[in-house]
Image (cartoon, rainbow, N blue to C red):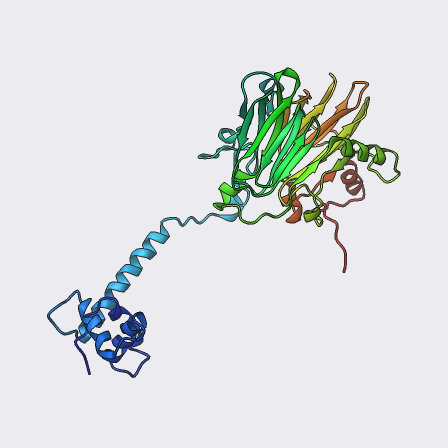
Length: 403
């Protein structure tokens, strides 16, 4: 039997259930409304149905059920039309490797942090990358200098999973929800997700103020459209003395690389990737006087801080190498202590020290993420030349086994 059903919310649901139920429409309507008001009697539920009627004063008919189904179909059709507006379908061969603005080779000069007021000095390359609405140095990372005049304070804040602060110059203190630590030249402090600001204070410094090299992954969060969640590692403090001691130990060992003399900065919570954080990667690398570190390449962007160098220290970089492993038509970046230069992803680059003294560089990369994804693909030129000589071209420089 048909009851006096006038409920605009129940009717569309009944229309679908009608095909699969043997109960009357009245009983179904009563069940729907009783579900919204547990404990109500059948009569009270039915009165609730009638009170919500958009068609007050008449009894529902089978045509009402059909009309409700038609309205739902029209609404669904509108949704489908709206969803189709963003559809793009490309021919594979021409679109598989889309043309994008390349990562540029640019320098953040040390003069920016050597004078002036207490402030953050961003290294914003978003316009070169065609990225609108957010600042970034590489697609995933933001690099800045922080200058803090002696006796002054400044707050830094980022919606990031990882933040690193390397002390270029000076001594002072930083405080956040994670605690308070003192720092001096050559130290690095790293913090996970931080809900509030990190407050920095300079106690003593040359040039009238301390300088920090600040890196974080807020651009990656912005691109993904997410907010940082739980922390993935514990705060860490790397002391200059410990880093240099480890480099010295490695220099006297027999197992260190002939092409590099440096230390990777790791975290106990990132034991698998052996990286600074689950996103960030850093290396304190030394280049002895009168030496050349042969070319290598990797898929991550490197934001290289020159820690120390005399005139005659530089990096050559370019996308191609010749049969001898030399970079073809390279760009030359001369090192300036306290300055940062960008190495694009996939580019071969070699480090040259024509001076008499050891030079130091601290690259910061998003290679923690790449390493975890097995896509870092770091390669050293002499290994690749040996493979080519043997008639082999490998797809990825990733250690594998048959296990």
